Length: 125
Image (cartoon, rainbow, N blue to C red; front, top):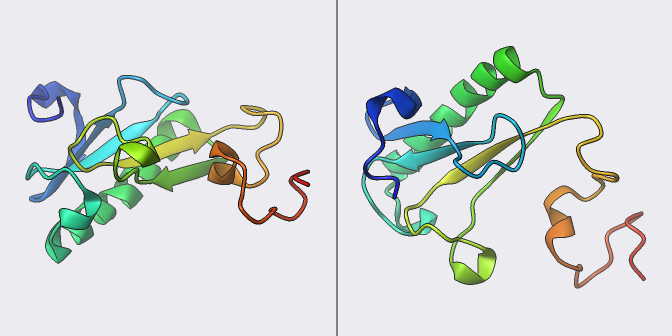
């Protein structure tokens, strides 16, 4: 799915990784960063590939700051189907966040499922 991106879709890249807008964005400006080598899991990346993908996180943030002006970000990786990974080519999500895009953002990604131990102030009992 990610391996046949048209060159025009690529926002930024380096020797080991590239970034492009997510086809199914959570928010305006949602970007995916992938290694150029096809591996399913983030944990299968070489140390150099990890560094190459994470270097693009800052470049993408700078690009999104100037283009969309978000006030915050979620940055994350889903590894495995049980974690929600649906495309098995390792990728990092960079999701811009905007004032009011959710009613209560407290806990960030902790809102994916109920915590094992309640998070302070999130209303869990």
